[in-house]
Length: 365
Image 1 (tube, rainbow, N blue to C red):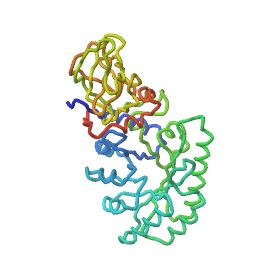
Image 2 (cartoon, rainbow, N blue to C red):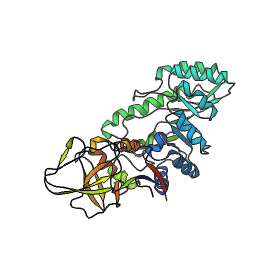
Image 3 (cartoon, helix red, strand yellow):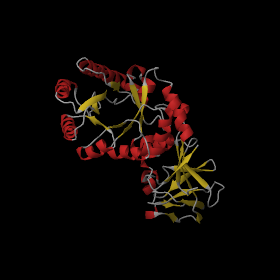
Image 4 (cartoon, rainbow, N blue to C red):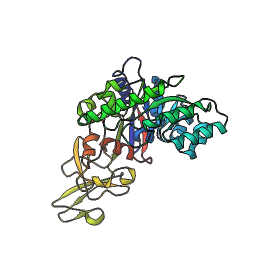
């Protein structure tokens, strides 16, 4: 077993997929979001498992992520959410499907597809309904329809948008305005197309909070990995990733002695300190230093002392019975990642995706 490792529980993944799928209307399908190395886990292992379960589509942020899935044998369709013109050759080579979110990207990909003798290459139209990040505006639907009538190189596989605050019920009016806007957009487009693309707007929080926004397909990312939008939903899901390490060395401090760089921690009395082989290069933010963060050893919290180093951190084990070589939990099913992230005003997404690729991934069932 690796000293520092991220354990990936595929049984938990299956549970989460089934739990979220059971919230959908009978004909609604699921698109699994596996960008950012599967939210910091292992996108290939996650996708292979989900493909066995019959997921409808995958989505990734960038073409290179989709190419990595193809290289391990994923055959399901893959939507690239943020394609760049430089990556169009990879998209075509690996049979990936780009999101077209602006007139520039539309024109460039259409020209690229024509130049490579494509017919009806699947693309996805992204509309901005309020997130104001990527997407066509509603008043561009006429232009899009005109362009589609002039080309046979591409064909619209789906029309979609993204909700900005579906996890926050205080923004209920805004979310419902986004859903209404998307309904207006799809009415304008579908009434003039000779075929019907599938529609999707919901993320994990919308699956939970806005069943009226399920349309044909929902996209789920963080929910697959075990995190909902409330403590109650978190209890129904199972964290897929568990970050663990071991104790490398134990040493003692007398009153007045210091720990780590810049002598950031000064012992106020006798203390036992454990050094762990994990640091900010592995994804443990320096913000967790000096008592903000903690690890769990034999069920007890050990606060981080001093500054988090690049490859190591130190914790106070004065009141914990432990030895060198003992296991240490950063987060897992029992040690809440949400609670840990809150210590530095962060969120589960950021902590998960920060776990360095040098940390060994270990698949467990």
